Image 1 (cartoon, rainbow, N blue to C red):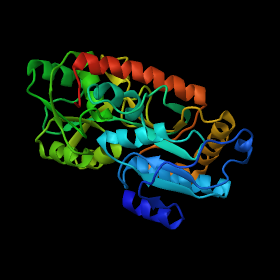
Image 2: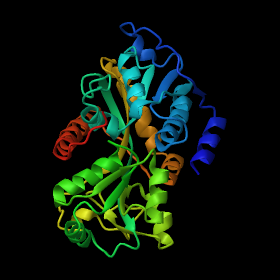
Image 3: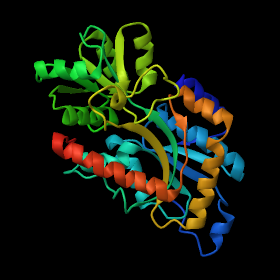
Image 4: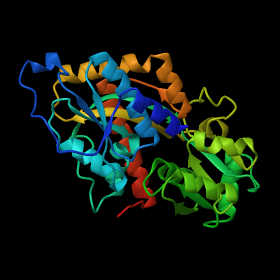
Length: 335
């Protein structure tokens, strides 16, 4: 499905290019009123085909239509997304190099890569523009595990300290850190099994080689429907409209403050002129209100979203404070 959607968007004229040297000098005073007067590069910090890449192509196609300028999708992957983010942090602050970012690059990675560093400051290096999409994180277990609720899982895990295992898409990913927060809040101890991506993690969960996983519903629900997995709840603070039958963990267990979700946003290098940021944000707001965009994002298990730059900045700061605490308490490191 992802490949089909990405292929369709390629045909609409959004071009993927390999990385090139960071470009144009900053805007001269007053030039921002003509923005954009040339193609805009939208950096995706991962390889083509994933959710961030697809979201970038959906948004890029719309912005290109609105502006009458090409929006070039440029995949710069590596180091858990840090290479692409660092590239944008060093780019000219003129609005012509932007970053589509998942929450972990700004609120998790800087605290997980403590020794090696990430090459950017999550607060000082960027100018937040707006959210683009949000999505739930689901708790699923192998159907053979003898529990049917979150509180039963907690009790079962406490009776077998360290014996249950949980899968993730890699160290420091939202999948991993949501499970780490679950451990911290519930007082259970499980064994982390990191994988190179979500797909092999889900495969082993279905096969029973691992017991538990926090992941995106799109990858888990097909196996819930076949009875191979059981879902115990979603980590969001409110029900997900696409999953009305699945309760939130906070409302259905003793973990009443449990809250974790995925989000994807658009940011620019720090110092980008405010008129430029506002024009980009206006394009996001318009795009995220269109029915075809909402439908395309729903295929990815995401919901269209937008907010103000100040609201987005506050979300980043709030999430960074929360996740850095979890990372410290659980001793999570990717170094």
